[in-house]
Image 1: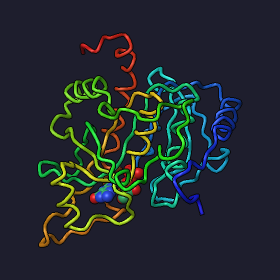
Image 2: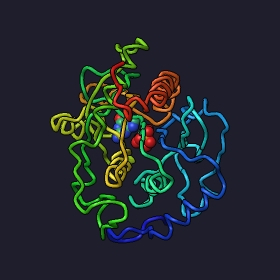
Image 3: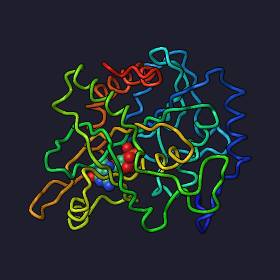
Image 4: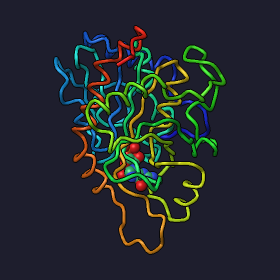
Length: 298
Ligand SMILES: O=P(O)(O)O[C@H]1O[C@H](CO)[C@@H](O)[C@H]1O
Ligand SMILES: Nc1nc2[nH]cnc2c(=O)[nH]1
């Protein structure tokens, strides 16, 4: 229903422009920061003031959310004095959307004037040291679908957004990660804040034990079904990126383990930790200007 065959991008520059114009003509907000809320994490937008909410279904060319825990609304407003836009719900490859559609909002953010993208997600922990409820600052990622040609930048390159061969060795801003680590110390969150490598698989099934073992050997600390396409497109168009992954379950690496992961459990843990995540994200947003002023000295 949603995909177009081949690797050609199914969204034209005209589509991006129409959506941007539609939003700009309906809101006075001019966000510099965009936040993508992962599964069960929509309440990250709760503290926003002067809120203006657009259901995805009303926005031209926008996909709609089909996954429980993804509300399907774009929320504009002010948080800690900073104008922001929140995606309450993201799009996934397994929903049947092309990666071009999955990442459509990121290019809209760019055209709206956003400079920093904060991505959040729920993921399964592969690193033996990780516990359920840990918050992982994403240091790097592995684009597993990308290895198989499922990549949002495949097809003709649109130079208006970025270059043909973007560098990804600095995908996640070191400065924002340092700031987040400082904040986790201040908030006394250090016993559940980690750093690690996120791996994207297409889903929708959770991993087999053999797959989980393979991912661990490859150096993945956590695994999920999102985020990487958004980050790739964000880096391509020059956005600064920060990523947080909430470890909602431990991925089974052992045939004797009885627990079976399910989406309801993922949402339950997300809800349980959402306030901590919100505190971290809000404090980070409040301080992003320190980076621009070169003042990240705590
Ligand atoms: O990555 P987010 O959107 O947080 O969601 C994660 O949670 C869902 C599985 O429970 C999958 O969609 C996985 O990617
Ligand atoms: N692929 C995958 N996605 C998740 N999202 C939340 N937990 C998991 C998991 O264990 N595996």
